Each structure stands twice: as structure tokens, then as C-alpha cells.
Length: 244
Image 1 (cartoon, helix red, strand yellow):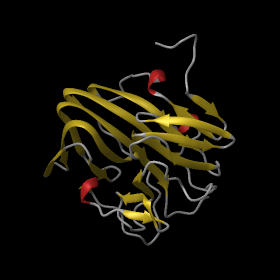
Image 2 (tube, rainbow, N blue to C red):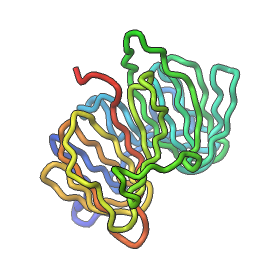
Image 3 (spheres, rainbow, N blue to C red):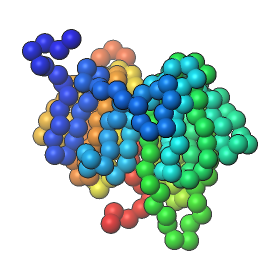
């Protein structure tokens, strides 16, 4: 219950912070027994779509002609790709689905997933991206700029076939990004665990698990983990393409 209209959610020209107390749920076309919390979309100024999908048992995500990335947060999903490959996803597992490829996503039990969708930016002379599944705990962690207190797990293969990146970043208590970043890429960020302080533009926001952040290109950004447990987030950025 909000107290006299108070919320940490905040929208500025170069960023958006959405906190769970302001989430609005609605089904997207094609969804069955499921709803979406749309966090970022072209109406905001983003060049991608990111939402949280919440499924009842046997709930279905629905079709899209866009490329799609799914990261399972809770529950279980059954993924059928091109009527040939079937995969069961558990929390911490993920899948990439190329644009226009046929697939079905159905919840084996009540589930919740982070979903990213965007048009594919074809690169002349480059092979098209391919379907894959993976698990975050099977990806080696890489120290960020040599700092073992900040670990990065890249979920998308290091190939120019893919026009975006998704990473899971983990910060020890008190650890921070080594600099204020200002760059041409935009971000969609979902806090998975812990909390901290995020500088976005000229604003300093306390953030915690469940929060979503959109950062526009060139938005000044910096994060520091605060608390007694590690902070972790899932972060999207456009990648491997010109900024036309």
C-alpha cells in the first residue's frame, strides 16, 4: 500500500526506474493464462521491449516475429523449438530464439520469466544467429576490469551474429563499477538479488531485488552494492552494430 502517493519509481528523460509497487499487469496478444509487466518499449524511447511474464500452470507466452531472449526467474517452462527440439527451463536457465523462428513456450507450473524482444539488425556478410539454451551457473565468471569483487557472466555468445548482449553481474557487498559510464548503448536492467545505489544521470536511486531500470544512450550510470549480501542484476545492451 502506497503512503500518500509515495514511490521510488522515477521517470526522467534519460532513464526510468520502475519498482514493484507500481507494476501494472496486462496480457499481451497471444498470451494465454499469463500476464506481462512491460518495463521498456518503443513508446518509452527504447529500441527493444523488455517485460516480466507471469504464468499460471499451462500458461503460454504467445508468438512473436521478433528475436526473443527468455531468462527464467521462478517455476518451470517447457520450450518447443521448430516442432523438433523440446527443452525444460528451470530458474537461472535461458534461451535465445531467432526472429521468425517458430516456438512455443508453456509453463509446466506457475512461473515467472524476464523476456527481451527486439527486431534483428542484420549485418551484411554475417551469418544469422542461431537458437541456443544455457544456464547461468554453467558460465564461467569473469572479473570486471580485473576486479574479483565484480563478476560478469555473459549469456549471449561472443559473435557478431548477435546484435545484443545480456549479462548477469554480481557485486560483493561494497563493490562498485570502477567508473561512471557514459556510452552509446542503452540498457534494460532487472535487479535479481540484493540492493545498492544506482546513479542515473544526476539522480541517485536506492534499488533492490525486483526493480527494473531503463538507461537511455549516454545516460551517466554507476552502481555500488550496499548491504550484507551480494547484489546481482540481469542487464541488456545493444551490441555489435553501428549506432546509426
